Amino acid sequence: MRTRGKSLTMHLAATAMLATLLTVQAWAVDTTELPDPRLQARYLALTHELRCMQCQNETLADSPVDLAADLRREVRDLLLQGKSDDEVRAWMVSRYGDFILFRPRFSARTAWLWLAPGVALLIGLGVCWRIVRARGALVDADTDPVGEDAQPQAKDAHG
Image (tube, rainbow, N blue to C red; front, side, top):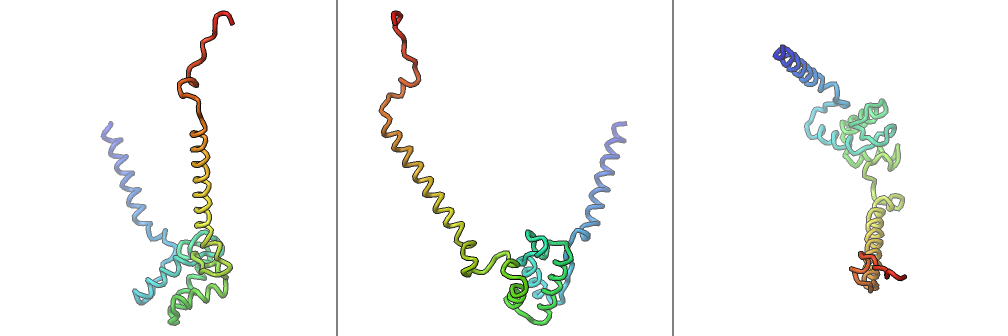
């Protein structure tokens, strides 16, 4: 009886693995194939660095929505027309603004995006430095012997 249960479990596991392997293609969002492998690589790189304007936290390559499919098709068409990667990015930015780029260009409008992490790090280091100095000053100012704090004073029997 125990062998039959083990056999059923193994059969179910094998069926689940086979079903998973057969449906891998269904998980793909973008199945676009371009005629030239270098063009295909450029297409993949561009669709992974452009943001889906509807999802906003996914790349065009990863987004399943119709708008992302339209934008992927536009990237493909621009590449087939012979446009460079910079020209494709410029076309997308002219239509959707800098927000479409996951890595926005450095400009006066986006400077805070690039500089904020460094400024935050400097502020954090300054705060840490001040805390360490303040605690060091407290230790220097403490003149009580260490042992007296831990032991209660014995009271006089008369007092």
